[in-house]
Length: 394
Image (cartoon, rainbow, N blue to C red; front, side, top):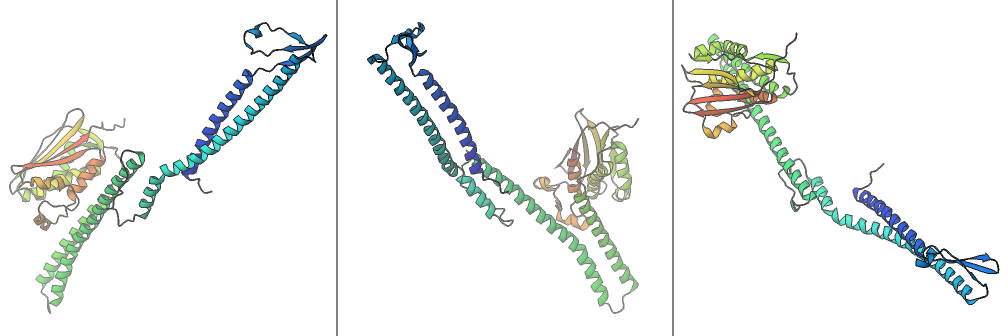
């Protein structure tokens, strides 16, 4: 069954309300009028007729008396005529009241219908403009509606939603383009080396070895990129029921990165905190591993890394600082975006610019925040996490 339009529904509601009020007011008016009219009536009495007055005749009604009136007298005929006149007036008054009530209800309903049509005209215009929009017109905005009324606020809210959708779609397109570019780069390198090898009439073992090395390196780069992409898309739903020891977690991370730390001759200092929390251990370790790996990868040769965690009773604050070349201030707000690199030359290191973006999403999923500060050749990543007591199974 097709739903009744809102204009008709509002009209019906108002007509029902108007009808209820009219019926009540008419009934009260008719009752008041009937109780106010004076209707004498004639009864038989010995020796003639007795005319008794109604209850609402003023002071004379308190006596509640009766007087005899001869049926052939002029006074009797006058009272009888008055009684008939008052009865007719009452009937006519009741009929007129009912007709006026019906006219008010009908007229009010028609007037309400047309007034609602005028009031809802901007809503129809808004609906038509929204219906004409397509997915390719998200940059278009709805205009011409004053912000001081409900429809204006609805248009403003819709424009806000369009802005968010436009940004989300733009980010999605940029993400897809960047991902395709990151995958195309190693594939191009592999194809180029294979073509060069094919052009050699008699490739030497060294040339084969060089080509295999390039293919292996670029394949590993693609595997890491795909793994990061999968992490970003699959980390929406996971449990938060692991007890995470910060000291043990960072010790494991440093152990995993030990070969690269020794290669760059870095001095790593881990300040033990004895702090624990409840989180998803695998994902939280992935986030902090990306932050520490970033500090290792872009640190200066022979530099240092310092890791500390503390609590103020309301939240945990973890800092990871390094003595690298630093990040320009104008690029700091963008470093957590997917595929963003503060220095494009860093792409030669094999990174795709997803490590910090993954870390940011994981930390936000845990109810925390992450931001970076960089000055005087020192970069500090600060992570805050809510204090969640570790689960204990007794």
